[in-house]
Image 1 (cartoon, chains in turn blue, red):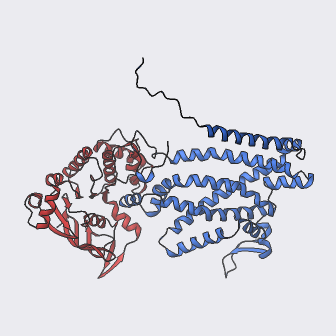
Image 2 (cartoon, rainbow over the protein chains, first blue to last red; image 1 turned 180 degrees about the vertical axis):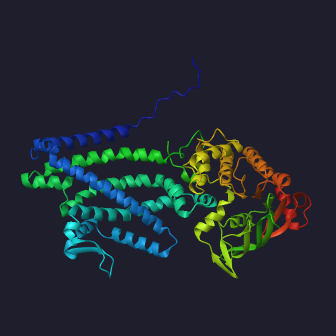
Image 3 (cartoon, rainbow over the protein chains, first blue to last red; image 1 turned 120 degrees about the vertical axis):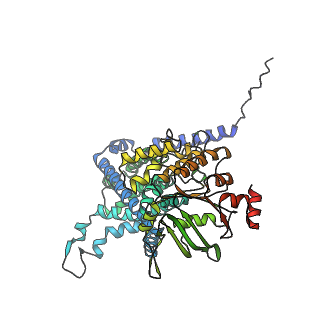
Length: 294
Length: 254
């Protein structure tokens, strides 16, 4: 008889995992079947419009607006977060006021406001007050077309949310880092740029990935001010051919594709800013930075 | 008096009603090694942090290399210095921390050359060359590409020493540099500090390593409850203490 002490055991059975998995699969399949067999849905319209030029152009607008808004929002958010952590009370109040205002009113309301800015201020003049110096002047609707109004609205709103994410990231960096930087003669802005923010990025990127996906979907709200993004394109088509559900499926499909693709750069960024924080050879990173990473 | 590196006069520091430093006066000559010993909470680390103005003081004056730290005195009035002027003063004072405080997102070499390039404005290639020399000086010439998390505590602390030296400081402050290390790693760090002392660096070391103090220090200061209880040559303070508080502290640690 083999008296080896290797552990050869019958694995524990998990019958409920199999049963619940079976139920979930059955429900999912029956839903897909219901969609595909529904006579009320004209599937040929879905496939016909999936690659319609208007849809594809709308998608392009959605991507551009999303990227531009997230760029502006991230820069503003970093500025707001630093202001909120400043020891200058005026900067703290300004940042807090901005964040409270733009978080406290609905995004849809802000979009409509910027879209209809021309009704409140028909003419815009940019110059030095109380002098005749004028840099720019004209009709508001010319200076701020719908797409610019949409970008302003989405960027400012997003900046307010992201500011808190950036601030949390900055606060997560060990205080000893700033002391070490100070002792080397670094200024506070240099310390923020080279020492604190790169470390804060690790904490900032995952929730910012969330915000990016949220932004991508929120661009659909720009339909109310007639910006020609993906949802506007699909609803313009369905307004003519009355195939609302089909075109919702078309735009829904593309939104899903775009949000999935976004995960790729996020993972690359997480690796980039995770450098030096990996747990190596049994020696762990400083306690403050330890993450449950297998 | 030409070579006075540190001149602390009646330094007082309090956090609210908690008086941490109660009038500390001491001087350190250029090239001297001063060891500060004392029980935890005695204010010795706080005093060290006041020397490079990481903490501001409530009373007294601190002069490092004939410069008043943190302030400008005009007649009898003190004016706070601008942050960039304080940063300038700190450039000539290196500091090594108990918990290393290396920048975890940079390799050992990047840690060493960051301030020379970004603050002192040294040419990157030149800084890199000097950085590698400094790493060799602390026995880590082959660890330049390692991130701090890939180094042992003792190696991290030696990188931290190299990082501080990279700014070519006139004075080095050590805040319990071996207290966070495993016992078998303490020796390497102390060896680096000994060779630094031998090379003529002016050093102020807060430490619990009595052996190091006895061997390297020119002067030992015993601080308790925010005042200097006793000071003198290491032999005198460590082997023949006069004050009862010094005696009872040394009995506990030796």
